Length: 219
Image (cartoon, rainbow, N blue to C red; front, side):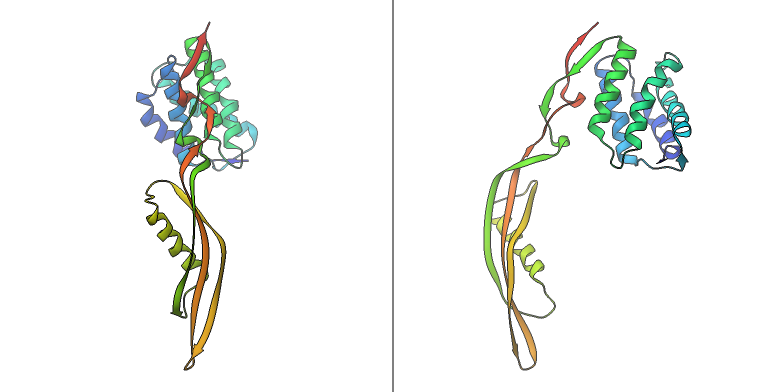
């Protein structure tokens, strides 16, 4: 288990002056900011072993929160350590889980409330499917050597996207490809064939997350 916190500490301390785990919206913003910085900065460092990792994370969280004097002692700090460590030691950092865990802890510790979050659709949650799909098939015409089927498929996909007026998020894939070859006067020429599918107008995932807002907060 190798974690990278040293460079992150100074970065977060500088930015933490405007981030407070004080109450509800502030606590939510704290979680979004903290987990966003973890996600952007990377999760690897030269530390090894659970004890070293926990000590470093505890020191880092403490420095982050003490900027505004919102920490209520080591017992409070310890409650942040586990979720942060669990996220940092995974092969892939899950910013959504980090936000939910950290926001709940911050609200319960600083606001003394139990909280649940709303469910919503947002681009940050990733793409679930696509609303619009089109297929395009065509050949490149005879070309000299130095080109490939994949190159023509990419050109054909770009044509399909332009024909459908697509400028936002999109994807495409090859449904089939091939080529004809001929040789004249010692020079080979190729006619590439391809069929592509383009997709656009994304349908984003639905998540229960601090980014959606607070559903309810009780005592």
